[in-house]
Length: 240
Image 1 (cartoon, rainbow, N blue to C red):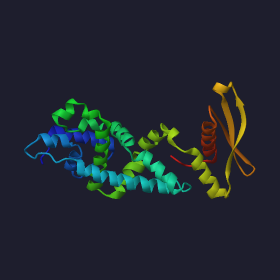
Image 2: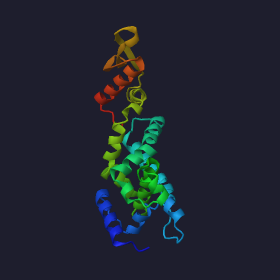
Image 3: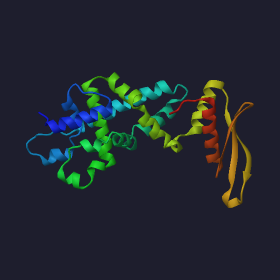
Image 4: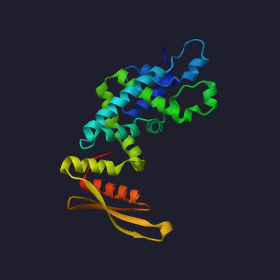
């Protein structure tokens, strides 16, 4: 397929944003061929990016699996799985797609265009997977690993930071205390304040005779999560 000059110029702009230059720019272009344009074309000009989406999903699963395994040495398999699942998902990948404005490069069928497909999270997420597959196919696993975990890791760290309530801080801290100190983590209820219908609970995380950080919340569970989060920050436990 011979790309038109305007299309090449557009894709070159994306290369600058990606901080990656393709050896074969047609591979990059192929990442943006939505199935809707294939269904509407009868001259076989386009090939759907669905196979690239499939590959990208697998590659990204391995990339983030390796990244979290190496980065979080004090977190067990269960917590690693939860962390990975919060990153390798539609919301996360759609967020990354919006960061790179991938919707601007999509080639859609008329019906999908009219229905707002260019801004639909499910399509954007799939497109990001296809894009990552394109980088992998154009280079190597090491290159896509570096692209995600070094060049653009801030995209995913920022996303996770905005969704911190999804972390199980208590489990992360408990695992750390058990692994490092062979001890059991406990939470001490320090006080309650306010009327019965609007109480605030104050707790402190403790292991052995060591007092960690405190937290507060409208119920004990929320207070304990905050105490665990504050303790994690105090101990310098890496979890992002």
